[in-house]
Image (cartoon, rainbow, N blue to C red; front, side):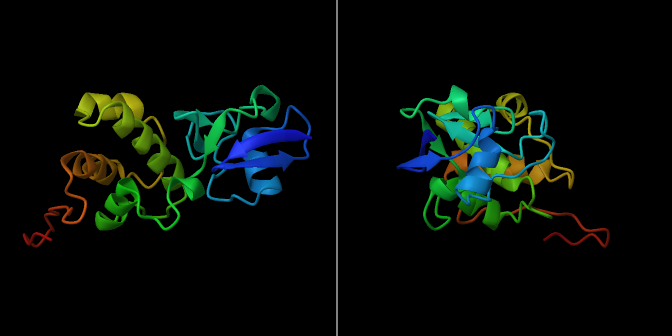
Amino acid sequence: MQQLHVNGKLQAVDAEGDTPLLWALREQLGLTGTKYGCGIAACGACTVHIDGVPTRSCVRPISSIKPAEKIITIEGLSPNGSHPVQKAWVALDVPQCGYCQCGMVMAAVALLKEKPRPTDADIDAAITNICRCGTYNRIRAAIKAVAAGTTRTAGLNILHTDGSVA
């Protein structure tokens, strides 16, 4: 039995010590916002925060996590989707399929905590998650909207083939 501090609560997890944190979160605790993507820490769909540090949970064995370490999943980020990054994601229609977006949001939150006004280079260095739908321009715009404090009015100027702008 392993004790994990998840989203503000100490939780008992009945799994082998080499079980990846991802599976303990999803299968034992029912926190399915954290996704399985690649299993080798390459894609970032499984990103959670451990003591504020974005961590790929698919390769982190639960035996390496102390009960005092605080794990935050997308479900623990805000109780109702009101975190500024989540609001920017909605305002800018960032997700297409949405599969990777929980991990993207977690990576963006960590970046903005560390660098409240990130440059393009900062975003490129910190957001190493993979989005197969290619929503990177919207992700960048959402991060910049949060940094500028404009999440309520965030929007993209999309030039359509007919010349109109939306």
